[in-house]
Image (cartoon, rainbow, N blue to C red; front, top):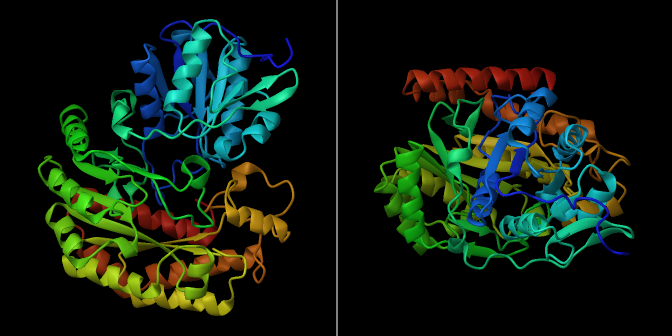
Length: 487
């Protein structure tokens, strides 16, 4: 019948879903953050609630080979294999899906993640190894799709999916975001790999720590022009009940023996009163330390002092630029004065690490004067760390549309090249070539990290053999990147 899916109608038996994170080309880089696939853990718990048995294969933790994947497929016999991919990993996810099809041709393959959400029709057209696509939040959509397949139905009427039909790729209407996050079960952390991995959970915290990621909210109400989160969550933000957070923390400590928590919210202090309540929960949880990302315009001296008293050892601020003009153009919603205040307050509160995140080329119109303002902001404040990346025009962002319209992106750029470190950009800005963008990145980073005073301060602050090993590996990784441009 016209409009019916032409593939992917295999019947799913109970207990037959494998969720896969594809390999990242920089998964072994000691300079970068490496965290566990919490999105897959959330999907797994919702599938379990629906009565399905689930397994997770994390090929950022386990070296990938088709033989390893084949052994998993033989042992588990999954009828559905789901992949979650970002833009730089979408091609490797498609290759893994092709490997699944070679070994088990009747297995249904499903793709989700930020890239798929931004380009649903294009993704299925480009990668025929995927049968279905889940866009936006996936917990309810994937569970409904798997249950429909188990019952023998094709699932073409499910909101939030795209699929293949005789008439081409069909993209169904969107599914509403989950309004009550506490209606979702806790993520299936028992399926995650807690073995030692490279790098850090967050810059400054060695992965020798028993770290665990915790979401207390989802989304961000600020539509920064460069941010790909809009493709998944729009401009919404939803908060979890602190009572559920306390229960989840207790389980993390008891069951996974977590001693450091990475609060994975986009903006932890968006609601300062609620953040203060969670701080008190964190201090009673039994963990040793925690860190968070937030905005410079949502903190106060009082809140930062409370955070420190409750175990916060790092706060990272998304700044992007020191140019007031660019901050306005990209819709950042902050001022340079707020940046200066927030960093000073965090230091005065005694928070051990304060990080600033910056983007070279955050708007295509960036000038030398804009960059000089950013350089002064980096050099003029007492940061522990700065991350200086080159802009990446991710699908689903206003920035990408702006750069495409201006002809600033080369045609045919492989998706795997959409990375913030380790490769020469295949795009430019109005005033800077790709080579000049990279040179600015290296110059800004060198002028911050290679100061003798900075090096001596970090060495003097080392508190254990674990930290010494971490800083040694990170330092060598940085020197390799600076000398070669490769991770």
